[in-house]
Amino acid sequence: MKKKKKNPKLALQNIHPVGWDKKRLKEILRQFEDRRILVVGDVGVDRYTMGSVERISPEAPVPIVLVQEEKLKLGLAANVADNVNALGGIPLLTGIVGLDRGAEDFRELLKSSGIEAGYLLTDRSRRTVLKERVVSERQQLLRVDYESSHPLDAETERKVIQRIEDLIPRVDAVILEDYAKGVVTERVARAVFSAAKKQGKRVTVDPNAKTQVSRYLGASVLTPNTREAEALAGLAIRDEASLLEVGSRILKAAKAEHVIITRGKEGMAIFSAGVSKCRIIPTYAREVYDVSGAGDTVIAVLTLALASGASVEEATVLGNLAAGVEVGKRGTATVTPEEVRVAMEFFARMPG
Ligand SMILES: Nc1ncnc2c1ncn2[C@@H]1O[C@H](COP(=O)(O)OP(=O)(O)OP(=O)(O)O)[C@@H](O)[C@H]1O
Ligand SMILES: [Mg+2]
Image 1 (tube, helix red, strand yellow):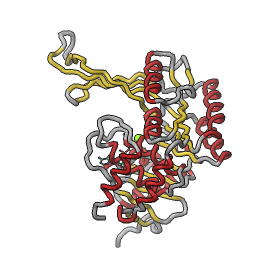
Image 2 (cartoon, protein in one colour):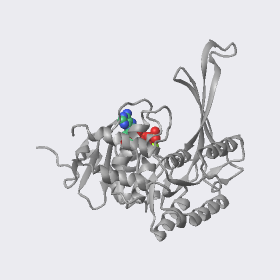
Image 3 (cartoon, protein in one colour):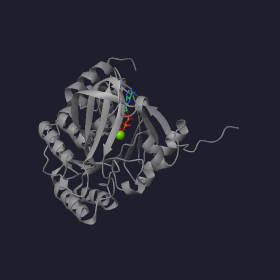
Image 4 (tube, protein in one colour):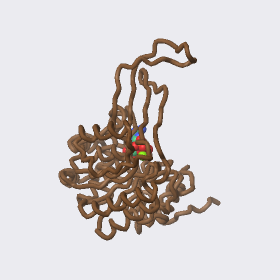
């Protein structure tokens, strides 16, 4: 006899382009304009040092990279803010930088993206997170991480909470980006959820695999990727039954409205409180070049869409279309509403 499934009531349901209401999705995209989103979390800089290798060092058996190009990009929660900005929204970015070269680079990057730097806080005891990649011929040779990841001290934590409480009344929704670099402490998370609740604002959370799911208690939406979902639920996703079990466990443990598991090339799975179906959305990517940063694009679109009155299915379809555009670009990248519209027209013509 076959073993009984653990979630007998949860069924899978696929969402296909045939069911899209394009007019409505376009209307939602238009509503992104000037939506104010508070982005709280660990911020940093991604640095790419690119060059050619022609010889081995006489000092040690390592290649010498002759540098041809250096590129800096907003990283971690700042990349999410950059995505909100590119989508037409207004990001209010709160996080911690140190008093170092990385912080100067970071402010420069914000300035050139047109993102307000005034909501950041400085903690001289911390290093600004900076991830440097040394790349030659598209091959990554080395990554160098500069960071502090210990939790905030009590004084800085108080300042961060104060800032969050000041800003929440001024925004349409909140994104909490936990990269486990110290900003999203238990108290900071609690302050975000309770202030947002008081103001009737949604909080979407990009969780970290190292954090206990209980820290996210009170989130409206969680968007773990497969690895994060498995860690939060304490169970591997091996088949349909385990996927359903993982989603329901997180939903219950965080008491969230929705859990959206982003599953790389397998698309996304939506779990909603009180809904007996897990909705599955396939990916909509025309070409896959570099998948890094797709999760950041997803949470930016999803949050803007929900803040614009979209249902969770509509928000996820838009997030998935935007992610499909992002993975076609090099490195972490941002996506515009126009690019999402073009992708929508393309996939709406595909047979279901
Ligand atoms: N190989 C792929 N092909 C098509 N779409 C992809 C692929 N990888 C990612 N995507 C799209 O991007 C979404 C998010 O990707 P993923 O689940 O890898 O998130 P992530 O691990 O948080 O990403 P990151 O941390 O790099 O930002 C997926 O749900 C899917 O829509
Ligand atoms: Mg991610």
